[in-house]
Amino acid sequence: MSYMEDDFFNNVIDLYRKNEWKNILNLNEKSNIQKATRILWVWPSEEDIRFIENIIVGNGLRGIISIGCGSGLLEWILQQSTELEIIGVEVNEEWWQSKYSCPTFIKLTFPTFPLDAEVLNPEYALLFCYFNDGSAFQEYVRNYKGSTVIIIGPSYGKGRHTDPQPFEAKFPTSDWEVRSFKEVKNTGDFIVYYTKLTTAYIEPPIVPLV
Ligand SMILES: C[S@@+](CC[C@H](N)C(=O)[O-])C[C@H]1O[C@@H](n2cnc3c(N)ncnc32)[C@H](O)[C@@H]1O
Image (cartoon, rainbow, N blue to C red):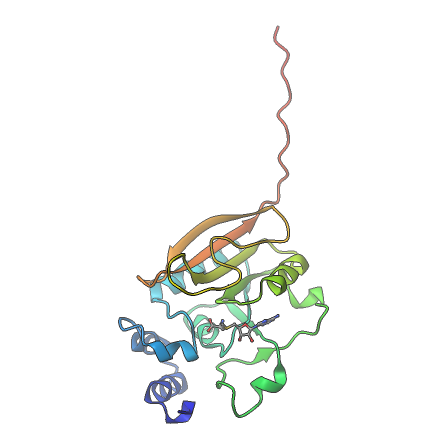
């Protein structure tokens, strides 16, 4: 069945045209419809959206660069529901312009490799939602000079695999740590916020005993 013949997908498109992002979230609020993952792997609640927004605003950042954004539906919802600037990055431009690909909700950016560090503006957080290439993840983070990374993906036991895994992400350096996290509704998917430690640990001076 093509996207255009699918009622669920047509409902999404209809609400997208009417700018009704909340109603798009409501379409899959309780049911976890399997085919919904064809256009977005994780269907957040508004609370989840606010959790992401607070991370960005709390760090004084301009927005989010979403790597491997796919259809860009989550990114469009973030754009509509917040004041954040959202950039969606994908690979394989030819595929995304073909008639076989899933329709897209935002303009996609296709970087060239090796990566130009300009693509990864440090005033934005990097987001990886259900990303599936651990070595590309490392390359993106290595070229990113900012300090906020958000990973969305399944926790253990959900029977799905992503790379990076939200709680077991293999960063290129050891100075990244989990700052906070939130489960997406009761789905077993998690939003995990990592931050880069910027201040080096300095040994306290030894105070001589008198
Ligand atoms: C499982 S899909 C997730 C799509 C979307 N984030 C979502 O949650 O619905 C992973 C996406 O990552 C993209 N991807 C894979 N390697 C990539 C790379 N090196 N740079 C950018 N995107 C990449 C794929 O094309 C695919 O669209």
